[in-house]
Image 1 (cartoon, rainbow, N blue to C red):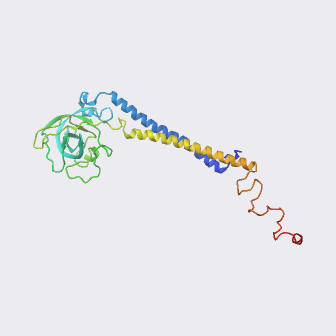
Image 2: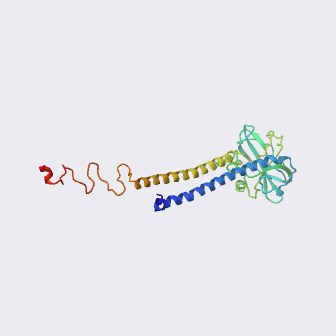
Image 3: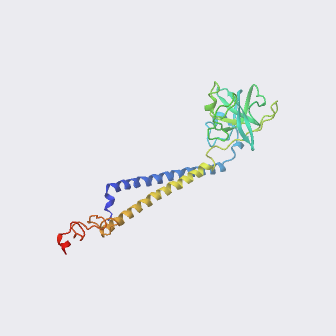
Length: 292
């Protein structure tokens, strides 16, 4: 009854099922692992002490920025150079902009320093004067922003002196010196000057350390892959069952309506089967039938 499974058509179906189910299980397991990693990172971040409360260390000792060093106080010494305003940044639900200066260190590389936040539009804004001479700053370390970071403007076309993303890859195209692949935000905003006071920008949690929407997307994808694996297996059993029932009916001589039983040719309705007697009205009937 199941000899049809060895036909070329069913070889193709069986091969697809054999490959599709392990692939779906693998992808579902991988997505589940991603979700578990995010949950574990979130739990570890909750257990660790607040990075801002830990002792400050020299900048070079905390690089490169990762989930452990993000938010740690970093110390750097240098001289402020170029200044940029970063528009479209919110603080406590208010629209404003960051004031960012590049601190040129003794190594020749510059560290982006967010000195503070100010409300309003960055265009034509007056900000506190940049400190002159050599300064030592202690700020919370942050990784370079990317296109998925909050508040980032990747559309371009900003006026001169404004910046859409705090990133070394962006800044190296605007200044003639190297830039650290990190930035710091000062825990206390600078006050005074003709531009008014600046408010401190709190350090953001490192990406991937919390149970954000992406974590639950991974969990949703896990369910989708496992459901698809079950669907493939269900459809295979259904096709096998239907084919087996059709083979059993043919073996019992129970042909579907409009089809002959096994071994019998198909004939139009109302016509005799091949080899049967001719109907009286048939042109093939013998003359004796008419005379009778």
